[in-house]
Length: 263
Image 1: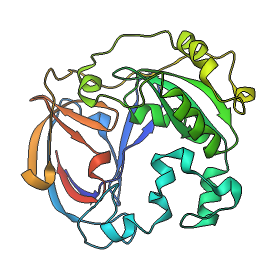
Image 2: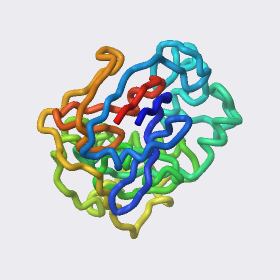
Image 3: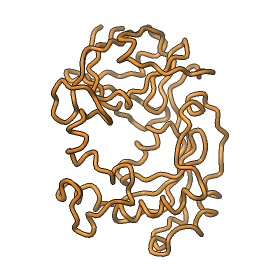
Image 4: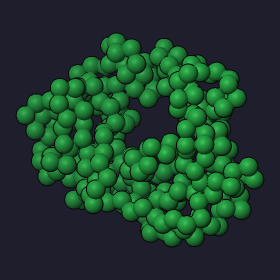
């Protein structure tokens, strides 16, 4: 079968084993069904996720001009502590920024390659954890806006990691941690204004990914450089496709590429 469409991060469904879906414009491709199958992925062209023009992708699926103009790529996206909508201060589009920033946010701990702290909108739990390839996660605080979540993350990342080692995550090179203990140990570093939002009594969320074989030495596929790739799909974790020859393809990092998929 043949599918063609612009890459966007895979949609997921939280079940006993995570289910993955690719939106290929005319249809949804249930990626789990392709496990143990030979598939081919070919680069066709670029298509910016914002303007939809055929322009080289700069970052996050956007062409260069859109990246510096769209409110979807403001600095506060990657650095929540820069959020200002709660003050009525516009970055690029105040209405959009209010719609995103002024809603409940979660500061969490997730364990993928190591225990890390992160921020996400409440409605993105557990999707955010799945996208990061975390096999366990727990909420620390639930706050009413992105700014409070951001300053909490800044305070905590002085004492715990805030990045994932993608190679270790794909190798499944991580040990189980007691995230309840981590949560309680980190409480003393939470800013005073956020302490009332601390979550006292909750448990870890466990996440299981559809992986038949983990790579020992994962090597990243650059589809823009290679143009086409074929291999047997043996796993899906985070936003990565894992192939039998240990090639891995990061769907999220390749948003904005139009691809053809055959199987």
